[in-house]
Figure (cartoon, rainbow, N blue to C red):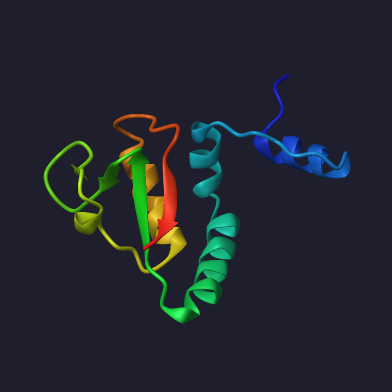
Length: 109
């Protein structure tokens, strides 16, 4: 039987190793209310300085508020600014419903 991501994480931690999760596993875990609440709390703590975040879907391509599946821009200045890392991660998760964007990153703006 295939182990769940939670089981794999615990086993890796006990072994002093890391674990690689697929974007689908991350998406599944992101819907866990305990995890999303902890992430929200962390984001609030991390963003006390007012830092904004942007999503780079692939090199030189950013997520924006416009038309498209998902909406993208080639100008970093036009990228959507998110108030927290969690908001940016949710936007990236939504974008990944269209394409996997396996090399996407969330960066400080």
